[in-house]
Length: 273
Image (tube, rainbow, N blue to C red; front, side, top):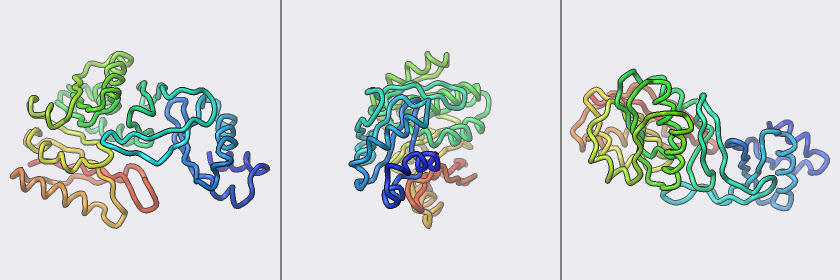
């Protein structure tokens, strides 16, 4: 992707400018989302037009402005080229996901991680996905694992798309719109809980311990600098386990996405024994 883009821009950019072009960008459905350094702001429309020219599947190009913020971890976007819309349909792992990239947290970078999770789920399990968003985990687990899947999401826009996505994929699952802390106490225990919150899932660990069955599995996600992998995540887990008077056994720790130089999204799979 980068080599083609740089070659395309060679005649319009200086060597110094070309060196600042970012290595990669996300494509969600038919929408490209770019990270453009301030030094290239005056040429951002040229970069966006190049992306459209090089990627026939891309119909709209936006720029990230200031990164993800707030409880819902949404990103402010600035239109650069193509169609002026933020709603799209993303296809991954054999399912279709309708969403609005400006209103819903979604990362196409962890499609392989979602596959890793649903491949672990056994037939007949009762599975909870906290912070389920537009329901990518929910739908993929339900489709491939033949399990009973629940999803809880506080973002009303994301929940709306999740309901649409169940119909779009002809999937049966149970979705709840609300705060996990308020919804989960009304539900029974689960064989497996996934906690794919992009930031701050640690504060929900005690609640997860209360609602996972004995010998159940929890998939806990965290953002960590390389030197703290996996110790910082395991420290959070063991501290919460102690408060909940539970014992754990770590099964696996995986890096599932790089966020910055030497900083990663990490998942710790552990059993509550």
